[in-house]
Length: 461
Ligand code: GUN
Ligand code: FE
Image 1: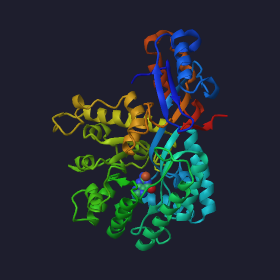
Image 2: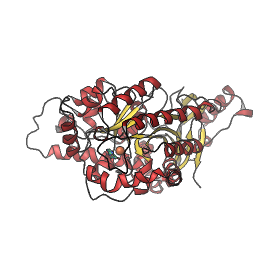
Image 3: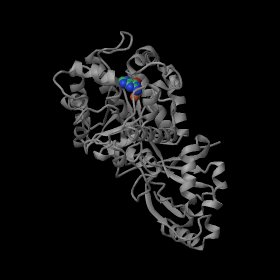
Image 4: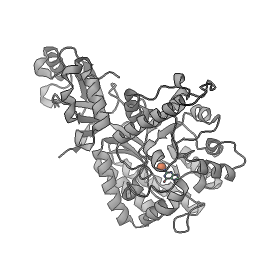
């Protein structure tokens, strides 16, 4: 991970995309002390529009730029429940807390209030792109679309589909589920029609079968057709909890794996994001990799709902695209900084458990033997929160870092207060240390500005 405080990024106000990125040598503490930086900046200003139509945003000595965070899996509709109800595992938790809360979104005014607060907080935490689950209610999902547009966040928004194994107060018929999904897709294309065309789009409708357990085969097939016809991405859940996996496989004796059920119903594609994958069966990761599916790793949720510890190292060794997800309200935090920390803890937990096992003799495929499986490091979790997310979305060419041509989705961050104290004794790695302390200690108070497609959508007050 190369931290480059002596860098300049030039982006176009017109397209919101990066047109140049340059790094300089010399002192790191600001242009005043660094003639090479000052000259370089002058050159860039002249080359890209001249001083008249160029705005220079100078960062202070304690500020730095990060690519915007990409939350690859979260439920905006569960925002009110965030931080409560962690006394039971997934299937019981859905029945006891989650379905009753989501059912309230039949009232689109209630939905508007929750979604407004949720999107504001996700943005404030530095999430420039969010992949949202709504509820089964189309009108409320349209409210979420309006709110995301108004705030300027980039998002995938999904109207949830569920036609089986749900309480009678929160279920749809197969036919209505499909019709309402089409109505939602139409709404998103309609509102996108008069929006500026950006690459990638600010707003995307995502086909959202909740999980196999709540969608009949007929519904999953119809949703696959919709995704193909409208060229839309798909999101769902996969192998989150052992009881869920057993229950799901019992429903589909024709398939040998959970992912195989999605494959059988035409739901695995490059722009499919599946959350969790804590308990993959043999062969399942290879199948997902073959279909270039993205995985949303949601460690906070996996801890809170007692789901287990997902093995990200193993996923990466299978060349899977892995991003991070907050999975609110299974997860108790809306922040990708929290997801990074929890991903580090999850990975170290696995490494520690494996190191205490008497026999490290594992198959080559099992990446949990200690020598073969170093836990994730700081650079890797920052990558997962940014570039990994972009890959999981199938948007690696458009998002995730400051490469020329990508959208300027970025965060102006402030170092945490104690970071300046270690500076003197750790000179050579000052910025490494500052980033490390930022990841472990920062929160939304250290995210000063949030940019999406070149627009500042949040400024800390
Ligand atoms: N599986 C099906 N629905 C859900 C949900 O709302 N949250 C989580 N974490 N897993 C699910
Ligand atoms: Fe989820």
